[in-house]
Length: 268
Figure 1 (cartoon, helix red, strand yellow):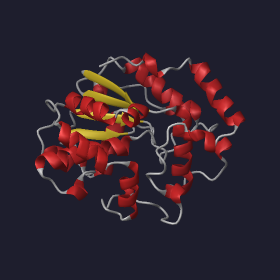
Figure 2 (cartoon, rainbow, N blue to C red):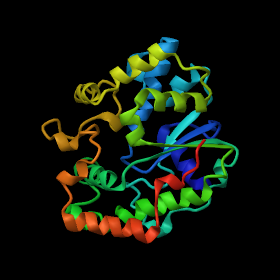
Figure 3 (tube, rainbow, N blue to C red):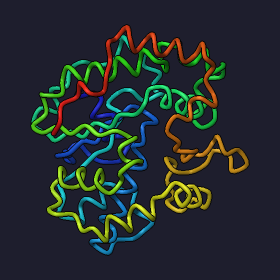
Figure 4 (cartoon, one colour):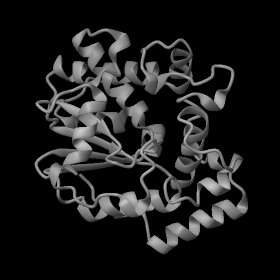
């Protein structure tokens, strides 16, 4: 687990002296960048910080009253091609920290992850049916990731579980909960509204095309290919456009085999 966090520091250009108090954790393609933009935009408005730095988490948090935060896939990133059997179950590094875990419908996650793997980071070149069955990227890896956190959700000092779907359906309430959990006292409603409007999918996609934030995490791999954008569709249930009935049945069986249900995550 410590090695994972050291890798995170190296990747983000921070030193080991940067020890986050709050971790925002998600499996890849679960909406983490969107949440990151929302938090960053809120803080940029409140503290009059540069708009193009809203994804620069360390700088944004350092200029605000909130504790240091880090956004991580907790060892589940696709670039590492870690198989589901090799995901670490040791979460002791989070014992004295606040953890926000973000979840998303597994079928939608797999579709979005497939385009990330094939169009952006180029770690897979098969069909989506092949993709969902792999140990490195497929349904079992996502389910293992969530199962590990189900077993460890009481370990952090504080734990908050939110869903991508919640952020879509009630963004103001969900973003407010996240900010309060992080330490923001009574989030300002007008700033929440402005942040949500700015971080709408249509606007973020436009800003991504313009490379507004100068960040690889929000930059299209190919401006002529909509599926290569980080911000693709943001559609709940969009998996039906890409997965066959057999694909859905395969994923649903994996979910049943794990007896998995997001409702097993505790409330804050």
